[in-house]
Image 1 (cartoon, rainbow, N blue to C red):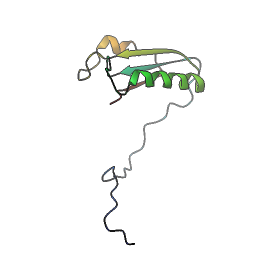
Image 2: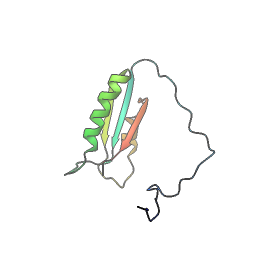
Image 3: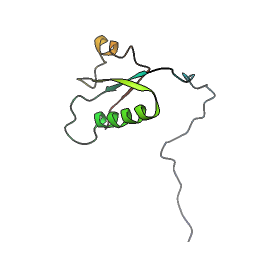
Image 4: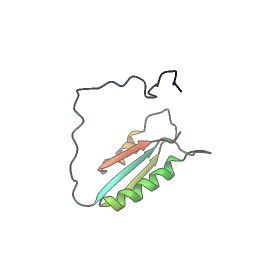
Length: 101
């Protein structure tokens, strides 16, 4: 049996870049604070990014020396996070931002 057609990569055209990746922070010392900025305030149904951040938190606590977590929810997806909200992440070693759609 002969296959007729074309195999298409779902990613579209893959462009190879010569640009270097951002430098890695290396090993962080001491107790860490991580942050989660959730871009959905109150999901009514379907995927739940808040729950996903709770799973990530467990993994980070298991693999790293994470002792504190800052979790914020943006009230409106299409608006930028306010200065006060962003300030709450200043002490974080890193912040995970996203939504589940």
